[in-house]
Length: 313
DNA sequence: AATGCACACAACCGCCTCTAC
DNA sequence: TGTAGAGGCGGTTGTGTGCAT
Image (cartoon, rainbow, N blue to C red; front, side, top):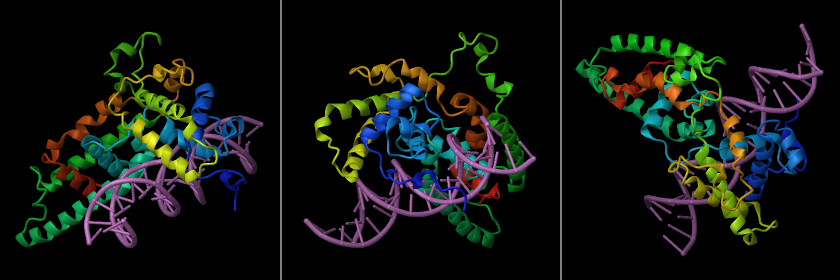
């Protein structure tokens, strides 16, 4: 039924990307910018389908991707947003600009889902024992009663949904600019955009390129995909390991010169996830998301809220 | 040291949405 | 207005790695 998948074409390579392919893709995007993925395999000679190229870029090569373990704050944010939005990982990812939807999805599936299930089971177990004692919610007993915080939760969810809709819409609501008065009535030149959050990753790519260039002799086109994959992972991992440490990275930081040019930074400033100004989103939600006191002051309550305050579970 | 298992994550698949014609 | 194609998204799978036995 329907169209055959674009990746069904004969000769289209699948599997892990090699460093060579990464470099080709990054170089091409440097020059032409992201988008028009259909033309990427044709123009680069990559034996990859357009989807694969886009995915590789957005999930791995795109500047600004933070790797490593999720912080508690990120974790709580994901839990809240998942409760609010469901499995809309792209929407959730828009509130964690340094994380890809794939990363969040993976993290949810491998960590948070289990964690919440465990929490739920613990709560149920505790609830059963509590029922016998006549106190259903004793373990996560909030300061306010369940009925009270349920009503507050519903109100907050409605408010948050409304805010979220506005935030996700094409037009930025005016209140989002409250924290940026300098941008309100000035020319575009005087309104400095926030520093690109992906700068660290541009450096990562630069390092990746450097690492690859330093040992070209080790590379062989006859290497198996698996060997390439392993090296790719190693190189990328090494580069990525620095990403969360240095937020000042610039694409032009490549001392070897031209592969990654400073001018290309503008490219990556253009290409970004929509609505990727973390401080804006955080300013909008941080109170609601991180005000743990309002349900009793601990993470358990928050998780309990996420579990019980939505139909998604 | 060898084996099995669980975990993490990159990548693929298929469906949906959007847009140009 | 309908259709085809490209891009986007979420679910799922495959594979490498680390740990326990």
